[in-house]
Length: 417
Image (cartoon, rainbow, N blue to C red; front, top):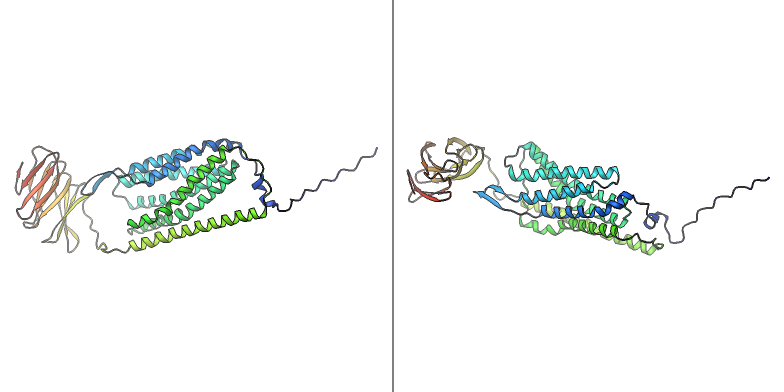
């Protein structure tokens, strides 16, 4: 019995004219991950939370309770609430099973968000910051910028695993927007702040009213972030499309041309943002009245007053309940005078060279002889209300003290209700 010869394999059919093999994945994308396909719908709500959290962080809500410009502020609350929303949304997205790179990326984002939350709290409640802590939080600012870019990359991975190619492309554009408009300029400033802190040099950024000109540019990445989120939601909820017809060469060329134009626009916008920011910083960094000296006084300097006749400066130090006496000519501390508990205000009578401090915790006014730098009298409020502010009339040499909750009028050497 003769065995028939094996049938030769059928050669692969060449692609029809106008079809490009390297674009096959656009027509028939690879099979998506079932877990990613299921989880893509559950990702929409956390993404919304992240968008709103970022917007809340950008909005500066301020409510101040201060004395002479020092006290506590309420504007940390919007940063804290916004970061908590971002943390919750990112933790929910990390539960979606994609691959190890995706999970590691979101872990990094969560860690950066936690330290950013600590930075927000630290910046509004701790006034005296050690150099090492300031350096650490400057690096946290850089890590936050990197985490934003890493998050967009993770969302692109999630879209690709779910087979949402259009959403993946949108997240790719969002990633580049954050790199060009946020990571490069803002990250550079954070690095500069870290270097200045490490070298012990002052670093201060104040854009002033010119910052309003940059707001539209810096809003572009956030707007596109919302667009990518909406596109992902739409693609996830729409049924699987039927296979696309064969793309023609004009269609592919048109798509490439549109993409090139978009990239050019983004590059120009990013370049303008970077140039505008650094040009503004350079302009603002030219001080009209530079700081000539820095004098170390007591703990928690709260208020300051000057005797124009002797060119002597007095600072009320809240934490250690003292008054520092500074020679304005030599810019050195010549004496430290103990006064009542927690001085919050200081005033000088230039005619008699007498200094008065309002002491909050023991409801007293300390009277200091400016020629000897000693306390000559302590005026006490019998009601024990707490002195909050003090002022002097240099003509009548009368001292006025505001106390809580009622006011009182005090003249030199005696107290009059």
